[in-house]
Amino acid sequence: MNPNENTFVACGSSKIDASLRVPLLALFGGAAVWLIVGLVLGLIAGIKFHAPEFLSTIPMLTYGRVAPAANDAVLYGFCIPAGLGVMLWVLARLSQMPLVLPMVPVVAANLWNIGVLIGTGGILIGESTGHPWLEYPRAAAVILFAAFLLIAVSAAGTFGWRRERALYPSHWFLFAALLWFPWIYSTASLLLNTVWLPRGVVQPVIGWWFANNLVFVWLALVGIGTAFYFLPKISGKPLAGSGYALFAFLTLVFFGAWCGIPASAPVPAWLPTASAFAALLTIIPILAIAIITIKTVFGSGVSCQGGPFCFIKFGVVCFVLSGLMYVASACPQSSRVLEFTWFGFAQTQLQLLGFFALIIFGAAYEILPKIMGGALPFPKLAKLHFFLTAGGVLLFVIPLAIAGVEQGKALMNPAIAFADANGVTLKFLRISTTGQLLILLGALLFALNIFVMTMKWQLALVKSLIAAVKAPLPEATAQRDQEVKV
Image (cartoon, rainbow, N blue to C red; front, side, top):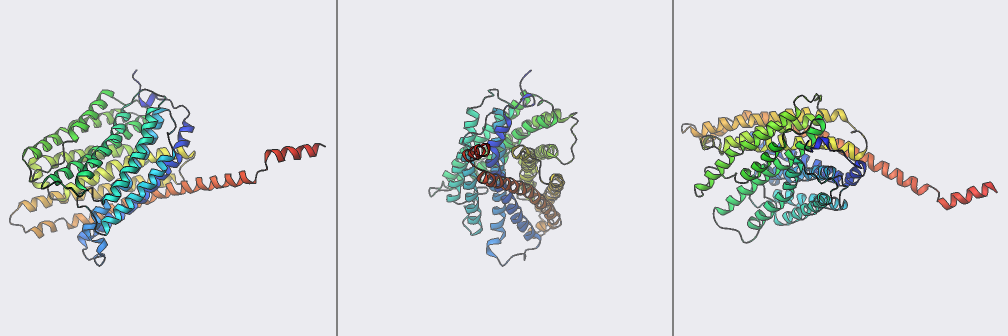
């Protein structure tokens, strides 16, 4: 039998979890805060479309600033650090090895939060670079890159010193993600965030390449790698089809890296053609991942009542749907209608909040009790979090996708004015705002569980330190016992 995650037997898991406690609390805690900040900013941006007078007197909260700040706060503030936290735990568990240099990720987590704070503040005060998903100013970009490298050193060290030498499908996806981000982020930053900018349309081409590789490929590597670890563990079944998993991994990183250039881009025709063809071929890894997931969870007999299993399964479903939306928006026939509409934004939000965030939530709820040595403070709120987030994602994304289709049809009709074509989306935008609010409520419940658990651990730590200080020294105790005998 080929080894897989389900047959893996942890050795010294308590030591492994103890080495990860402080780093993961730092990464998850900061990620929860920035998720709330990003969702609040996104809610403000959404309201401004159907209520333009909302906070109109505050220049910092104009749509042109608050929308990119919201997107980057969710991506850089929540998705990447939370994904790195899950990655550290999975690599340590699979390696049967305590985390190497455990204080390095703690320093990196605080450094990362400083970088996100500088970057988000820079966007709000008008210092954005103007490149989508790379809006953070140069100072923030340098800090984020350094923080990621610090975490990568700890993760790579844990992998290199592993006691379990076998490699699993999760290894392929997560370690590739560990190398992917420094490559694309450093390349895009050096070319677009310096004083020596390339000329003409080369800038948007680099921006499209970076945005696609970060939002689509990197998130897919981390999210699917995490799902391929936890689904067999929770279902009690081996991961179905290691060959399928390897095939999905190779096709994802090969075809996915070529996508992202719009069909209407003012560039040589071969670039959008190659991008559209590669996007069409990404349906191969998407279907392979769907088949693996179905075969793994089908017949497992594990009840799904809002726990981690529900989060991860729903997240994989959202990945498949967002991937199909991505393919549809890249096809030349449909892109003529869907381009420059809300459809692309809906697909991106489904990738961020539907696929990636839900898988990370499920993984965090599975990891936190293990590293803290106790149950969640509010397990019922964790279940409520699933239903709020799942319902919120549906209410957020589906109206936006419908609005994109209706808007595209109206824009294609020369008899309809541009303002009227945009006006057909207002009723859908109001519904999507309700979905944003539900997702925000779920994020607050997630943060509540993390911070209460952290506070309880800190309180227990302080009590143990006080007890250790008050405890009599061994020499004094022995001398007193001798005096009593005399």
